[in-house]
Image (cartoon, rainbow over all chains, first blue to last red; front, side, top):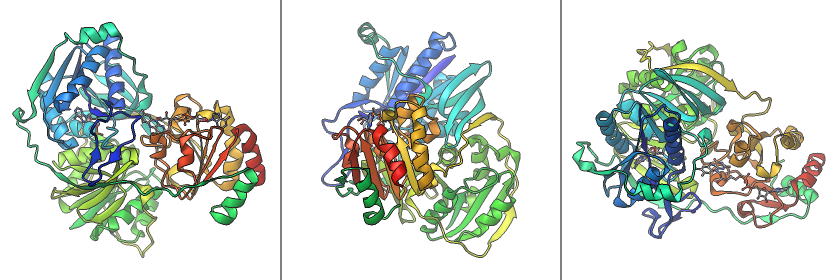
Length: 249
Length: 308
Ligand SMILES: Cc1cc2nc3c(=O)[nH]c(=O)nc-3n(C[C@H](O)[C@H](O)[C@H](O)COP(=O)(O)OP(=O)(O)OC[C@H]3O[C@@H](n4cnc5c(N)ncnc54)[C@H](O)[C@@H]3O)c2cc1C
Ligand SMILES: Nc1ncnc2c1ncn2[C@@H]1O[C@H](COP(=O)(O)O)[C@@H](O)[C@H]1O
């Protein structure tokens, strides 16, 4: 079976985002970028399915500016067979991304699409669910376990009250949670090999999707700063402060 | 202009998120209908009818919705969506699961996890793990919105509104519920508790989390954890606080043996008072703590339990 893995280039998760002085957006100039951590997990899961003989082909896809090809090369180095870059310089929303991905699903007909549950920049947590709706497929979000058995895929989901397992009809859409797997690192030989793997580029506006903005970004601000705290000497002083100063116990 | 709120519940009781989400919805300024889909709806619908601002409670009593599977929930919401300009649910794992599906079926964007209603089309929401707050305006004719419940108060009560039953929508037959492993706990729920005490990797193992029990008992606290503690298998996943876990904003948050990574802070830095216990004086958690105690947790946790 063919597995499609949409990945996103985002700020490195160790870097704290800074707001631009004019409050127009977050400042990404000269900031370290990387593959969204949930997408790394998605790629890893797809590659494991291939290693297990379940998947026959793993295709990584990203939608974004030219620079995102760096993350596609990483995906290829990790074991994806082929990469597709849907190129655009526009800042697209999850609905647009889902629509573009739906076009690709139409063309490539993957039986499984594995996405991250959330981009760590927009914190949207939407694209997989939207893609499932647009392609009329079943969805298994926030997956911590994925088992393919015949025509169904069993997905264990991390939910607020614990773990929920659902059986999805294939073809299906799955989004990854952190505990699904631990992604591997790309080896140097594989990084070299990845340079020769196919990477197709498609212009986003050639896919016939209406990319008109649906949401206007009015401004971006720093969150309220917490006023500086104090270091207490010992437990007695802590309890005293919580009782008389903070009045929370 | 009319708002639909989809209730969060466990087939027996409404979750506090429902009331808080109705509080957020009330700030839109329109009449509010509440949809409760699932089983054992009787007492819940009466309760929902008494939440201030609610005009109608719509019930869909059907096992099809018992586990709130996204495919059928989205279909149900879609079947009544024509009547509403705003469709709102809490940003729980349930709401996050079916709401984007609703949005895509309606061909509109979803505004995720709002923390403030500026006006009926403009909202504030955290991005980049809460390191920035975006003000966004929806340009769609219908707004699909999820609400970060911890940023809103419980809504007041009113005399009961009307309750009416709704037809179930088509069963789309895409997925089946198999099982659930529910974490049972006598303690308050993390997202509803006034006091939360969380342990991190510094706790060393699952057994040591018992050191937090006595303190939690005395404070009526819920117990949370960092992702490192969840990953290491000390505690179950539903205890994770953070960007990709639960968002909490209690009166008092006590972080024990937690370094204070950006992703953890994203889930708790809106707490009213933060206490950090960590043996490393340079741990970033101290930058957000109101009261920091630089100490070995194994020394001070028993002392703290005694002092309370
Ligand atoms: C995409 C992504 C999403 C994430 N989402 C989340 C999330 O939602 N929530 C989350 O928490 N993390 C999340 N993380 C992980 C996060 O980056 C950190 O790795 C994690 O929060 C660290 O947990 P910790 O503070 O318990 O462990 P550590 O960083 O290892 O800190 C342990 C602390 O314990 C202290 N300590 C050790 N022994 C003692 C002792 N005896 N007494 C006192 N103090 C002691 C140490 O000084 C140290 O500060 C995410 C990461 C990624 C990549
Ligand atoms: N520009 C993009 N290109 C490819 N995949 C994307 C893109 N944006 C989002 N995704 C996928 O959708 C997931 C969830 O993103 P979001 O809904 O934006 O939080 C990500 O983890 C990716 O798998």
